[in-house]
Amino acid sequence: MAISLVKGQKVDLTKGNAGLTKVIVGLGWDPAEVKGGFFGMKKAANVDCDASALLLDANGKLSGERNLVCFYNKESGDGSVIHSGDNITGDGDGDDEQIIVQLDRVPAGIHKILCVVNIYECESRRQDFGMIKSAFIRIVNPSNNQELIRFNLTDNYSGKTALVVGELYRHNGEWKFSAIGEGTHAAHVDILARQYK
Image (tube, rainbow, N blue to C red):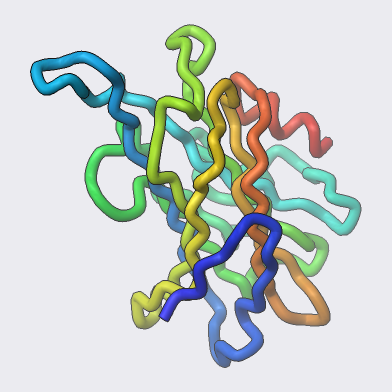
């Protein structure tokens, strides 16, 4: 049974899950319904959300371009974090994008893996997170497909163009997860990443 988190909550990942060396970070969302259409509601225009992972050192800094794993750089320099590919609509059930983390291969110098989502071309398309619904992040054990953690993003993020969703982090030799759920402004993941350089 998955642990359902609330904003600000932290939970152990590897402690109590013996042998857990690899996780899938799944992110999902759906276009929100807007007024209009035959029945009074219609689906909003496609919102292309992009999931990314920032591998941060002990000082919370992004040390090197290869430590930003995103739609244009699908693998960290050490190969421990891999992006599954870009989903440009958010249609369908389940995860829209996935990031695979090989916990036992993450270099010792990396202390946090920050999971973020931003809207592609948000400025030219005039889009923000008020145009999506049912957003979530979940952690899955790929060896048995068990969902370990789920964090549903229930806050109103209207006007925000980027979300810091959560982070995997090391603590006393174990991996934990922290549900963050903070909205911010960044027109591109590179702009968001600059805050950590």
